Image: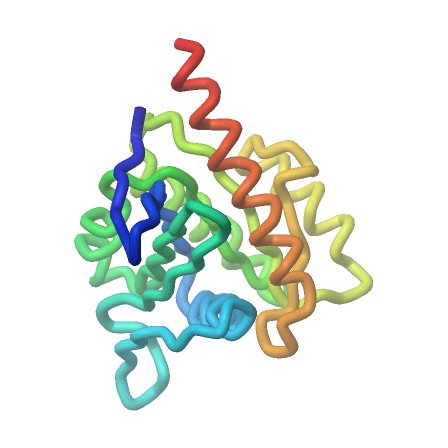
Amino acid sequence: MNYNFRVTEGLALKQFKIVVAGPRASGKTEMISKLAELFGRREAIKTDSEGATVCMDYTYCDVDDTRFHIYGTPGADHLSVVRQSLSKGMNVLILVVDNSKPESFSKAHEIYEEICEGKEVPMIVAVNKRNSEEFSVASEISNLLKVPNEQIITIDAKSGEGIDNLFSVTRKAVWESQSVLKDA
């Protein structure tokens, strides 16, 4: 099994690692900020003067007896070693794509290949910046990444719309992957 335990104030917490990756400027940092707000947290965000993540974003969410550590990776090509390092031991990958930039979908696919390198890790795709074309975008992403439509969630990282649904689907993917490991 791929989880650890931590005792906090007398409670044993199962711990899981969620990695958020995607092309530069796809909305990863905003999404993590909204997720942190949803759980009343502040996150650590390291950005440069232009607002790009240069190290990582981080927050955590406690639900019942479980802590979900959420790490956001930088999208810049020259920081691929940081993405690979942060993805070690991940339980779920959230791949963020900006549906207003379909040309970035192939970059998202490259990042997915780089991070997963043949590992069997559940993946959720967060399609950021909802618009009327979201269904055609979901179909295109589903074909490109071989992801079922129910694992493609539309969000608006700026407003926070859809973030709660994204976390719910991600949490379910974590638990389903753990039950598969227990059954094996």
